[in-house]
Amino acid sequence: MDFGIPGLRYQANYLTEQEQQELLRQVDAQLWLTELKRRVQHYGYKYDYRKRMIDYSMSLGHLPDWLTPIAQKVQRDGFLPVLADQVAVNEYFPGQGIGAHVDCEPCFGDTVVSISLGSSCVMDLRHVENKRHVPILLEPGSLLMLTGEARYRWTHGIIGRYDDICDGKTLKRGRRVSVTLRTVLIGVP
Ligand SMILES: O=C(O)CCC(=O)C(=O)O
Image (spheres, rainbow, N blue to C red):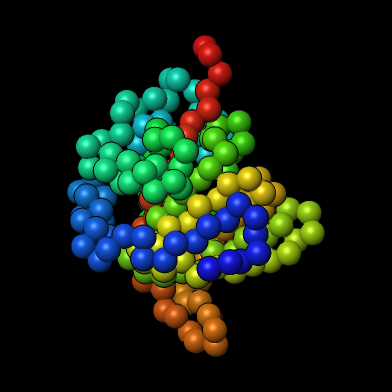
């Protein structure tokens, strides 16, 4: 699907039903961090949301075995040029969202990939200068890739709502879990 945003790719049904269920099962077997309003998990490196930074002291080691196949698949399918070394899992219950932001520029590489599990939701993309707004329905099992202009010149965010209106239909939100894969940029210590 073409949303007219250079550097954005949306791939519906990137994961099969079975792959989605298995990934969600693994996510739900792990510990959650509760420092934000929504629960998160970090792998590879912890990310400091307040300072918007990452350094070597935040290394958590290699990605766990259960995440490696999905990181390899994303690289193999050409959505990330190298293997992701940082993964953030976000959990959203109906009413929860994430503020509009551009992923930390000095922290993460040129390409960011997010896989949706559970419920659908609408993500809002907004051009940082001309404020053009493009809502995108993220369906379960889909993959969103942001690179270049989409990564740096557009914010992305999710309004904390209980339902989304899409093509005139009201879509009730359920629990959504996203798995965001990135590469960390760190200068030589
Ligand atoms: O939930 C998502 O798909 C996006 C997550 C995100 O933007 C982030 O972790 O920075």
